[in-house]
Length: 170
Image (tube, rainbow, N blue to C red; front, side):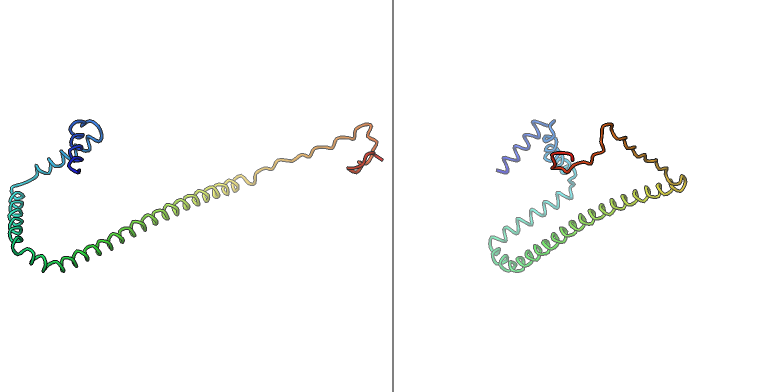
């Protein structure tokens, strides 16, 4: 199945090179490996050849005595692998804790900075208002006029208003 996916990705990279996905796949699957292969030197080839010979020798040796060699190193290899995993888990947990602390500190720093900015703006407005009062004095107050009472209407006999539930005025 992964071979089919690789062939499909290469097909998209070759058949549709102008699309964004085609450009990305072409860069990852064609141009980057070609660039890496272009940087291979004869030294790299010699090291690879020596590695192949060593692996072939180990496989040949493993056919006869391999089971004994693996059995002798298995407990130490298992412990090493387990310790490597534990150390990796501890490193990952510490990294997550550091990232979380960084995010919290950044949020607190942003909140503090925002509060300081608002306090600075308030202080500047207060100082400006204080200076304005010092230079111009108190602001003038407008006189409030009270409306005059209208004179009593003619024909009003000066009766007192009756209680609310009364039916007559007397």
